[in-house]
Image 1 (cartoon, rainbow, N blue to C red):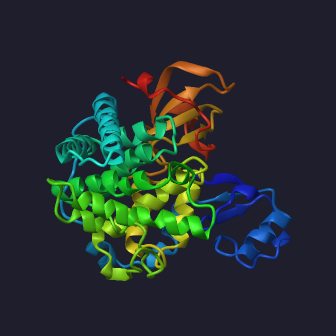
Image 2: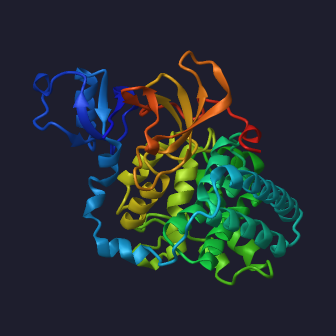
Image 3: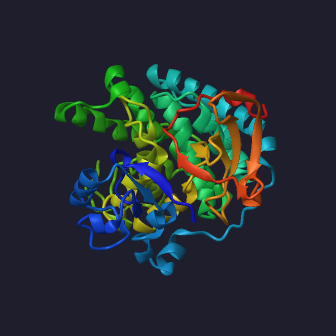
Length: 398
């Protein structure tokens, strides 16, 4: 198993520290290998080390192993999905579906801001296209949303949340009709933000008084969706749940545990992940790995523990769209997951070892162990900063 070298200042809670840049005996640590969980551990690492080596797979499974197989079975369905298209073939179709969704969201924005009624048929059309693409190959849509120009607007985030909720539902093997409910929920649960003062909606609350105003977007969403004919009847109620928390500390009703409907438990995780990775000022601009670490720390408190474990498995050690450095010195983008061997995804090499852009891009399937040199296969050395490589999605098979 390949270890990742991580500077101490970029460590996140939940990572498994497997090796130091010095002998363990030169530090106060009593055990060789541990999950980073406490500020004191981080303080000692900062004092003694400049970088450490983490084991991504252990970070995913360490404490999550406390979730039983029965717990996992309760959150998973029985629908078996098999990829019906390659990423290369599905990406142009995904592009059209995503573009249509952006158009539909623009229409929704205009009608809500003018006090008119949403055309539910257009929302159904957009979500049906997203669902169909995700069912054929989820990696295509996942790659597309990661490589789109990042924006903090309500509309752009709604499209990405819709896609991510649908992908997570497919991973959980939920039936297609439930995937469409999740996609619709992701698309419309924040429509009430269009009723907030524009500046507040764009940057988020900065104090307690603004937070109280900001919270009203949930009730606004419920009201708007309740007044929209043709939507699934459960949708307005589900739209009130994405800020509820597993321990009862959320809003607007402070629901706890099983009192939160299953789609709401999913929405809480996906919405938080999206906010953590969204650009500032509305989001925190974290890398996917650090965002997952943040969510992982809150399993059993803010979030359903079994669903957190499954979400981390869904997103993966190297998420689709993340930028990585190879042992060859080249830079690549992950374009498809390998669900059997998670450390060996399919990648697209976009820069050579000197940092020069490659045209055309070089495609590699690491599971087939292509060689850097006759005696050395390609492997991922480390993840790079989120957004460190600019790629136009139109250049990718489109």
